[in-house]
Image (cartoon, rainbow, N blue to C red; front, top):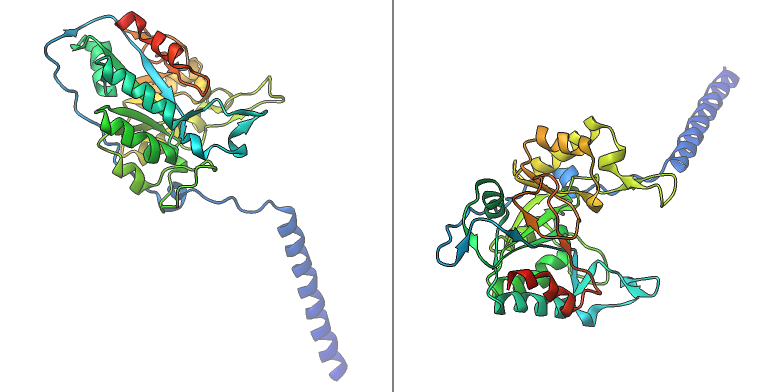
Length: 309
């Protein structure tokens, strides 16, 4: 009897060891769970802070072109470090706070008015009056430094801006600002910047590229199937409480499939990275923007606005 009990207990111990070993084996093989974004965890939503179109009087126009600017990161010159370098040079997507201040001050001194996207849409579609010197200021991705560094400058000069957010990167909790790292804005930070910024989609989690080599890589909006793209973009719009006026293509890459999906979702206009002014002759889903980079000199920046002086 004792032998049977020992055998039974030994057999159970062996089974436990085998299953434990299998569990540990597959646990080691599987990649660690990714850190879920706040949006995925808590289904957060943010106010898109959309503004009603203003009525402009005085020196206005109903046609012509409008320069649309694109920024990514704004970093104080004193905070630049090796982490901001690519191949020994400062990442082109970074504009220093000092240069940004000069650029915005120039626009103010020259008498430019920054349009909101609803105002741009009204101008493009309905030929509503806008100031003769008009500009649209946009930011892509939703970085924390847009709020900490760019927002005070824009507010000081009385300018509006649109921010295209990677909605899945919005954080529910606030974290200290550390400019040497890539950080995304929190719900609270985005809300605090509402007097200047309005928020639109830049995908939920499809701001990626795929390909067999760097030369062959293409945006997910081109490589992935239509249902997956539509699901991702719909999720991003959900985070923005249904705000679907505008969209910015990641990497400026799109296709007829992308445009069909945007139309299906009720998105009214979309922005590329084509370098020229926008006009009423443009396709609403192929609106151009001037990218402002680290090496954009003031001479080059001023040249964008030369036709509008």
